[in-house]
Image 1 (cartoon, helix red, strand yellow):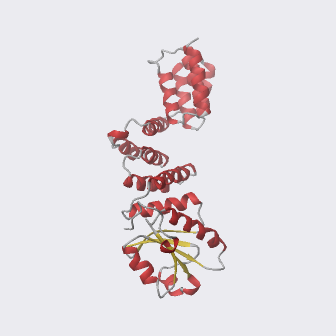
Image 2 (spheres, one colour; image 1 turned 90 degrees about the horizontal axis):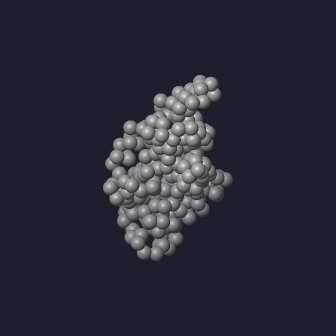
Image 3 (tube, one colour; image 1 turned 90 degrees about the vertical axis):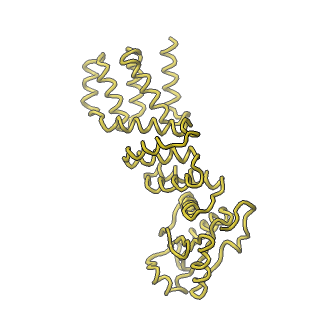
Length: 304
């Protein structure tokens, strides 16, 4: 494996053009030493002109942990046929002479970085610390966009490099929550290294897991709303309404119902309203407006 501890390797050593005649040496044989990213492109391909430079930038930033080969399919039709390249741009990652991953079409820069990082991790290479942070950020973007499976794979790849990466560990738990795989999310959380078990990232993931479990048993919002309106002092109905609202994505309304319950009877069910509010706060970012406003309202009630 190429040493990546020092400075960046010269671009000429990291990125090259290949032909059918050199493909065996430049890709198959070379990938036995360092993973090779192969960009299948053609001069007439518009998206290729965008993807190519982005790939080169990501490969260069990896500082020798991967290398890149560009192959013009118009001049390498036999190889394109053998690899069943049906559209371009197509990108494959090769390791030990075999393709191990790939994608078609243009991707956002964050996903390109994540692809590079996954390749490095999957082949036993070391992703630089800055690259790990980039990979976590890219995985978070995937998760936000609904690509939970891809996010989970990227978080897992980061953890192969740094098992104590709390952000990646929490992200992996949240990715499984997003896939409704709560049992696996809980198993991952329970298996967290002791060094990070009480980190904010895992505390947040734990809170999200607890809320996801509650959502599975949440009642109908309309029916609970009608009950609360008819019986304002029905604390259990108000609490259940808050759970249902949160399960339906209306977090702000859920917090409002819990704060109203706290105002009416802060000791009900051993302070369940306050406990539930803090579970919701823990699941959100500390600077979320719902958290900031909710804490302010709660404080005003406590110290009135």
